Image (cartoon, rainbow, N blue to C red; front, side):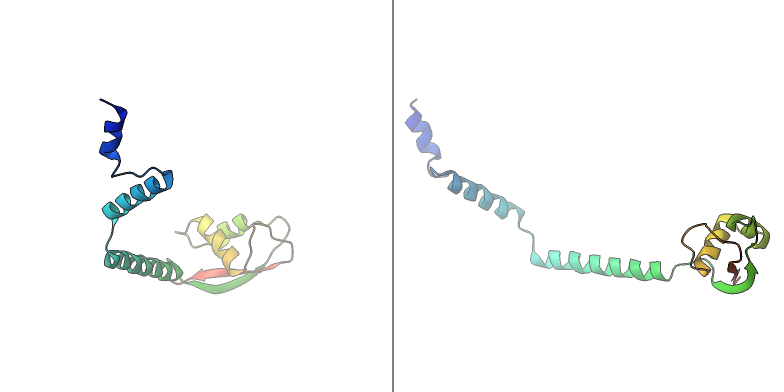
Length: 125
């Protein structure tokens, strides 16, 4: 068999330029992968609803309501952990109460200073 015979079989499917071959392959792929536009719209709307609902649930999530409670003045040697051990409700984890003190007093780190007035959170049961 001659090369010309082999070439003539595939001549109609492909043209001689590589750009045309690329376009042919792309067209073939797009014909196989066409998705209905209504399906894309439904998926997009569903994702928007899910993201919106999760944002709302996250914003309103919380186990207990923080209430303002007593105030204490930080003295020499006091730490947030020590203050939490003394003032937290009995059934509450100390770490949770430390975070609550930080949240009520708008403290970003665990550092407190002598003479600083801290508001102790009370919890609604």
